[in-house]
Image 1: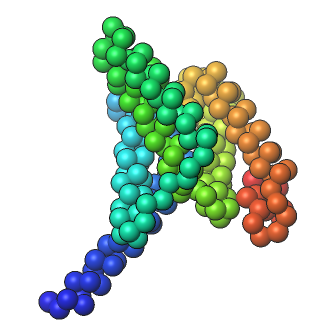
Image 2: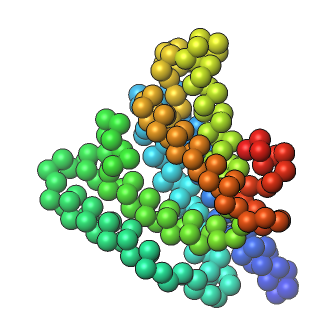
Length: 221
């Protein structure tokens, strides 16, 4: 094996990092609203947390790998970066003083989203998205993934509410089933997505760099 072939394999490995990082970002926005596992006791909450943890850690490691391969440390300095850090410190102090133990650090009984583990990943996810989705093309694909998964989730919920179609699971036979969680969570989530989509469509710059295009596909989105 020659040095050139070894160098070529290493180059291909280094080139894989940005692809995995970007793929993890897209999968996060598409899969988290839809993901659940029917054979677990907690169908939605725990499984979404596990998926979020795995994809966020994978994306962060790939992002760090990209910086190592390029020999460049990239971090955007801005005052807004301080806010999540301060929030995380306050959550850490609260978790240390808490008497709930496992529920505080990891979460249970549909409270996983408020655990220290989830908050840490949310903060890291914030920095990850801020750097990885810095250009318009990536933002467009992220938004398409989020809008598409939200639309699928909305159709599943609406079909179930009107008894038109139910997923082939016993727990999905309820009219209030949603891949988001409770019906209140579903309404809150879909309201945010609706305003986000309209806002991006209205304020996007004209031309090829629009986050949502001005053609028929943009109206469909």
